[in-house]
Image (cartoon, rainbow, N blue to C red; front, top):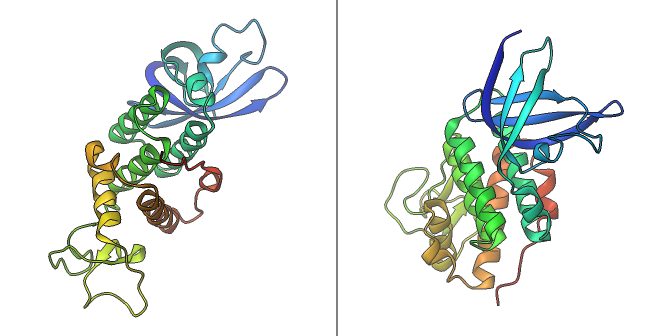
Length: 244
């Protein structure tokens, strides 16, 4: 059977039998792969810990009839334990991998892989607040999938902004002429934070106050739920840290 090797991030795992596990991987070159890791639940397993959620590994697999088989796994990024030590980081990472799983349902994407690995690495190093990291990841992942929101010009007619009405169903901010009756409106600081999170402008994002971050998170959550038809189950458990 054909053997191949790739870098992969573990999205989720399921028990199989007494000692095996099914792992869902987002790989760098082969898209999303479901594979069996034999014997990884035994204490003597050589690579069981390397195939836990949020871990990044260099894996060797061979093609099976329905599921591929993992034969080797070498750790590249041991992010799982560091993320699991912090509840806010853990819940944020759970929402990230669930998003990646849904966005790569039909085929993989190198950009999605690199974005996810970078976000998990940032979480494990506590580079930014977990909520900010998650919201930035969600906006950028959706943009890569073809659903880029607009937080400057009108998402419907292109009229130059800034605009205060936000309609997630229309793709972000909209001008007064395009805004439906009763459309929710946001302050300029919240819209600027959303734009900073989309652009990865951390210098601006980290200066935002708690209330502004909370309002921005609400918009991001609504935008994600709208585009991912079944929504994200893990998003309800995300811990939103309080800004000192």
